[in-house]
Length: 143
Image (cartoon, rainbow, N blue to C red):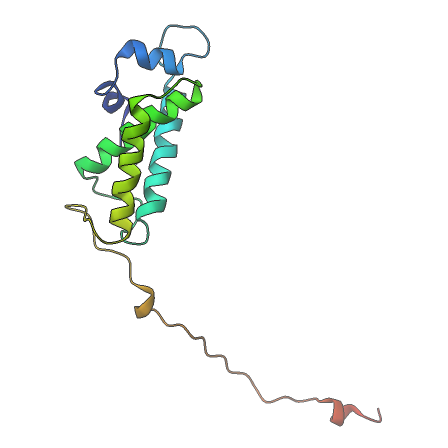
């Protein structure tokens, strides 16, 4: 499940801008494949950053994550078209800064499922058992 939709992107940029950022074929329409790819890339970045603290992908998407996904996707679309992202670069960096705070446990996501188990609660050792050795070099000498 994507954290944002093309409608969320349209809440941040005009339809004309979204067409300019995605229309490779000159159709005059938004290319949904490119939009979905930008959203998927953004969501992957979000998941990678918050995975140490939260179980990903998130089943309940808080508004802040939805907003970050859309903002990061708009930034990525600017990069896709090699267009100066302008203010979107600042917004992207703000989103990354917040995600770093979440990863460090200094910020919380409201309404999100519990964090995965910490490594301290997991077993660090593995025990193996086997039968006694039947043959050894000494047993096989002289054969």
